[in-house]
Image (cartoon, rainbow over all chains, first blue to last red; front, side):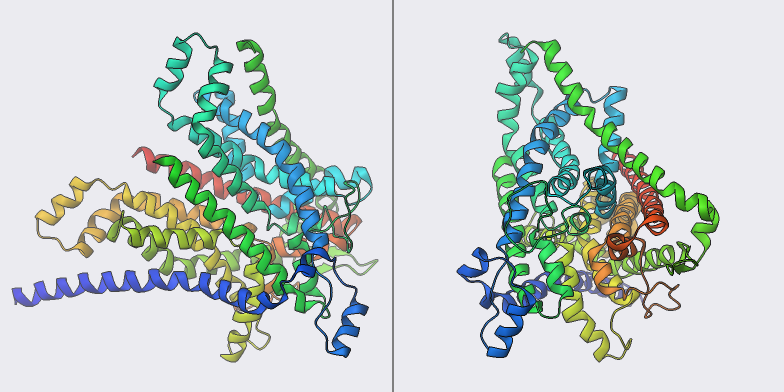
Length: 288
Length: 285
């Protein structure tokens, strides 16, 4: 009887282990399914002209389909738009984010800092579509039109909490002796922060910035209400502009352009995954 | 730079946060005011009409609130049987080994895939499967959206749960082993009770993510403005109705969409706040 009971318990133990292993492995399936599908359907569209030409008109696509030639055009307008908006967002988000992170790390117990910290959480959890609505109300309505500026403000708001948190957390895990040594040598707080603490925390902060970029680069909903989209390459910041995820959304909704979905998706996916892996590698290297 | 200037600089930078968050609230409330005034606050939230024919305009948020709750709840149900094993795999069975590091990299990458690509995959791969198995004739709907949402929130729930499972003190587990407990019994009687509140809070945060997910749901839910009567029928979530109609809306319809946005903002803010407070408590305990 006892033997049977023990055997039963051991069997249950084994069963749990195998179930956990099986289900955990199954979780990896969607990643490879998505990667596989996007790669197989998209790789033959990637060519030089795909990156240098803007979106084709429906007319040109129809002609190409009739003639049986590959679909012309590419996503140059989206790549330029994404880089322009991301660049403007990053230029403001990095200094402001780092300064806020430094403030939170230095004044952890201060009442005002706790409020800022709570607001950072609030903003980080806010759905991106809401950020889109708010930027529309703030920027698009007063400027009387969609623009690259509006898009980059939306991206800026989404990046900010991510950079603040990573800066704060990295600074908090630095040994306090580092700061104390700097102060003991006669440096004031600003000098110690700039010359000792920030350089020591650089790896962590840089990783945070990379992750923030990879998080917002694929955002579509907020750009739909702010940057709108544009079918040719454009560098002006007060006019509607395109972005890679916006182009994917356009291709998805336009039966003539559906062929182009996969090339654009493959480009976006590879970019995001490489950023993620680089960030992870740097974080690991920096932690050693 | 002297200390005083440094402190002022930091303080001025942090003013961004109250300004942005206050601005978000202010913009949503003032622009949603029209809809609430016209239909009444509770009437707007409980009415199921969504009619934008000129002259007989009638807007209510109930179909979309229902759609959001259904997709989120279903996504949570589908997510648990996968995220919990991943958390146990990474945090308990293979804690610290190379294979655990590989699995957590895989889940991190899953979290990094843009939602529009999840939507494409759901539309071109999952939707035909749903049709092939005759689960629903049109393929898109609450069920399809929830399945993809579930995959998207697994990484969030799993990595946070694993963190709490790793924090379970070793002496507790070793005590149970020395009394003759099997690994499964240690997990059920020690790990789950000790890490339970932390694991629970990680699912609250996963819900917070699922509530506001926009593009995936918009591409898969079917976009009809009725209250979904079963899990295979089509509908719209709060985020997806905004994504679908915001660009073409004006006046009262625009205000109604912003009112839905305000409601969504408040719901996610509350859920996230509860989650964060619970996590803080679980970390201290």
